[in-house]
Length: 95
Length: 481
Image (cartoon, rainbow over all chains, first blue to last red; front, side, top):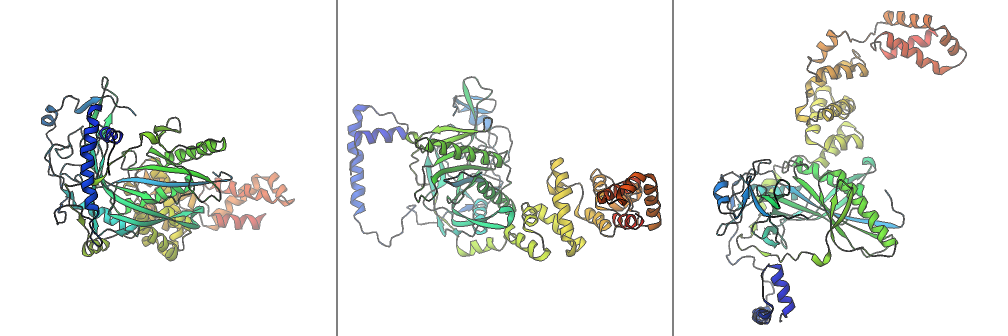
């Protein structure tokens, strides 16, 4: 399986990555070779094998429902580019 | 509403906010209305290097829901990342479930035709996920403010099959679901605060056509009324488009409550591609048989079972039973009342619960649990109705006095002299007086105008200030006229 430049552009858009047109063929080729490797894995017989959701063969541990965090808003907001009145500020978004 | 020649197909996706103390993947509080970002910790903010740890209570609540809708509980379920970019989603993905949700293939039965018939609505799945934050657009100069307190609040998204055929059925399903999650005590059901919200998938097709029409998804429905209005608007819009030779676009639409209409939010071309994949930060969740049965053991009696019991044990009509079980506290109030009055008087108890009690609660915007008149106090009043101390009409006045903070029924009746006059002698005096005062009406009645009888009853009751026993008044008037 191989990707063309348009597909790479679409994937980059979805991930909000800026990719120069000149770089598109390079990525197309590199990503295609990854997909080819996956194709190779596809040929393995997986009948009766349960799909793996995680490389660790373990089960999720659960935590008790208790409030254990007292967030330090001022400390967090000191790291933000802009904050006002307790809110994080972003360029205006309206749907 | 009906649309001749067209069949309507509706499926609902409902976001049910789970009533946990802490977030689904972090130990930050979930209290509504806190100061902005005071409840958003490093995990909720999506800081690098943090690790989500799943809240056991959220899992138990999801299982509880699954059992209550007779669904399959996945022995093994998996969390997935759903990717999209929006400022109120700091990680750039929402942790949700995709291929292996925790709950699948359940159903909910709704009442139609005023409770006489029921219809089964299939539930495709219910999955666990985290909520996003909120954007605030007012009060900032050329900017939006982001409050991430809600980010990470646990939700289950309940997805129905497209089994609903009208806006009315959609609302009935939604109300049933709303009542159920409150019974289970997994959600506070507060729609204004966004604890229970709905997206509606709507399509229409010519009657008899097998293939489904193109559907639209309408978002932002946070009241039962909006759901009904939005769906009706959407049905009419789609039929108009199709009847004038056009085609419906598959798109996401937004309901505008002020205008009562839906408008395009995202077209198919801009449709999201969420690029789901299993979240490597979370291991598969296992709900084994022992875990599931420990939850099954503590399930409360569900509305459906209670409704059946009310009809079978108390002989209530379906309409009353439906209304009483809709709210768990109201059903409990009714049962306490019946316990005090005896099962034979269940219908009287139901009438008062659905009449005066509900009206007073609505008027004062109170929950049943906060009722000013307790079931015991109301039972005290209804006993006086049953033994003819007061009429049903006077009882309503006594109830109002009790609601306003006066004493028990007996004291109010005593203090205000409301005791019904059952003494024939006293009533006879009143009857004689009315007859003597109304020669014209007596003439009319005797010449065959039976309707005038009501006038005499009214006059006697008025003279007695409503306290005369109506049966006795009737009897005496008949014999004297």
